[in-house]
Amino acid sequence: MRYSLVSRFKGTLLGGVLGESLVINDGNKYSESCSQFIKSIIPGAESLIKLGKLDLDEWLGLYQKEFNPSPENSGNQINIIFATIPVALFFHENPVKLRQNLLRVLKIGNDDPVIRDSTLTIGYAIAQSLTEKLRSQTLIPQIISFIGETETLLPQKLLIVDQLLEERAGIERLKAQLSKEEKLSYAVAVAFYCFLSTLEDFRLSVWRSLKLESADSSTITAITGALSGSYNSTVGIPANWQMSLLSTDSALDEERNLQQMLELADALGAVWSGVYNLDSHPHEFSKSGSLMSNKSVPISVYAAPRVIRGE
Image: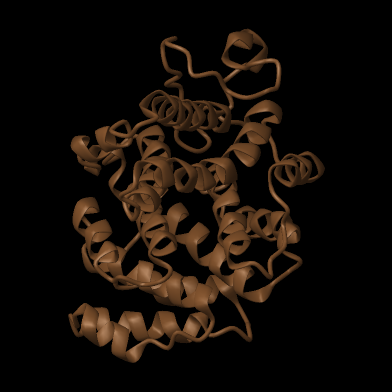
């Protein structure tokens, strides 16, 4: 394995946080914006860690406590997609279960087809990175097959991105050729361009997405960051960028958020492997069920599919 699985889990979560937060320069606004990705991730991750499986009723209940899940609002649309990322991490090794469970949790989006296709697209790409099967030349055709029949414009936009990547076209051609109809599918397609055009370089992928100066910049960079983080792991995320999460007026809160993302990724990887016993680690959780930002030794237990984990 090129990178450890838990490092890819962490890279996915930290990449999303960094991608979203780097768009905003003002410290006060930063804290609020950054919390949206984190808030979206936590309910599903904690439910999977607590139960060791996907319990849809509990997952939906935890999410609905945090958000008012109205898919008509574009901000809620992306929160719904972010909220499914722990499911993509947990079921990454089995494409059939991955698709089934992503579709199950999308009930919070009232089966909105654009949210559905965007979620399947991002979830599949993350899974391919985690299993080290991602190939830039074949990823987009595979994603379109994974989505299946649909009336949305996302497959068409992804095919345009695929063609532009083959021609090594620049961002200006991308902006000229890619329709902005269906705002969310546009953001997803652009994020995939930024990710796949600089596949091995997290910094450059996110930097290119920042330069787009789009109204959806935070969405595009968050998706780009999560995709590139899953592929390049924490090893590929510049240390000074990770430290930038702490260079705000509310550095203590951001340190807790950063630590919480790392703990969630560690625990999720351990539970996925089938060897993490929650009852043996009660100090990891507060009375409310949230992971605590303590100074304990991080969990680092994980394994390849079917080595430790039972069927």
